[in-house]
Image 1 (spheres, rainbow, N blue to C red):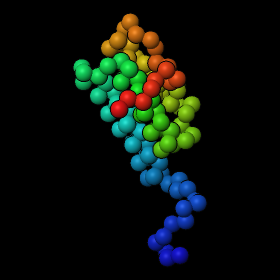
Image 2: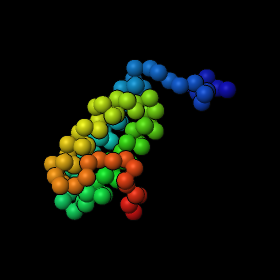
Image 3: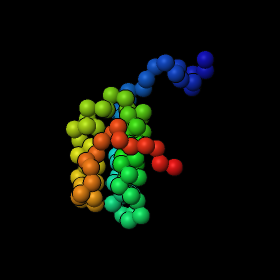
Image 4: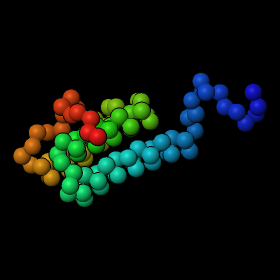
Length: 100
């Protein structure tokens, strides 16, 4: 193995890597919130699916983030969905089909 090649079994835990990963998570959340909040053609069903896809992307990027997601990120999505669609069902992960 060359000195520049990394072993794929070791996980890099440097502060720079962690900041980059958190920045990507923040970007996923902000893009999803902006899309749902600003695009008036997005239906409630599509918005719920966008939230579900964002959650999947975040947990794929950072598998240990599930409790923090539920505690910190999910309320943002729930609040936005309740503001846009006040008479619709609350955010439920199991009730969403994939939208193409």
